[in-house]
Picture: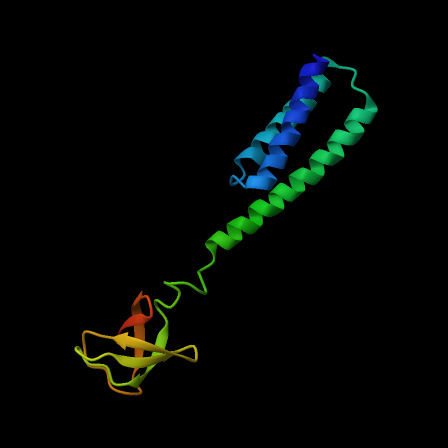
Length: 147
């Protein structure tokens, strides 16, 4: 029985370490926690004589690895929820100011966050009007009149 419990403890530490390396979204860390708790319950139920040095090493190691795993999972979740601040679709929904008149057939220029962008629209937009960005295709914005 003692070998099985030792296997469970080592396996739980390995699962938690793998979670830190590959970040599976918490599945491996959760499995490691369950495995470790199962081993601790089996130790108390079966009254298995486990050397104190073994528990003195594995419990602190597991606590450190578990804490790191939880921190990584929380940081990854927060990063996943954030709206992108750069990239292809980061400007959609923002307001801009028309710098050069935009016609259906002739693109104009808008200013967004201090940057000049080429813009097209399905309607005529005069200079100094406020527009809303509805799409971004590479370096060209599609806009509509803002409210």
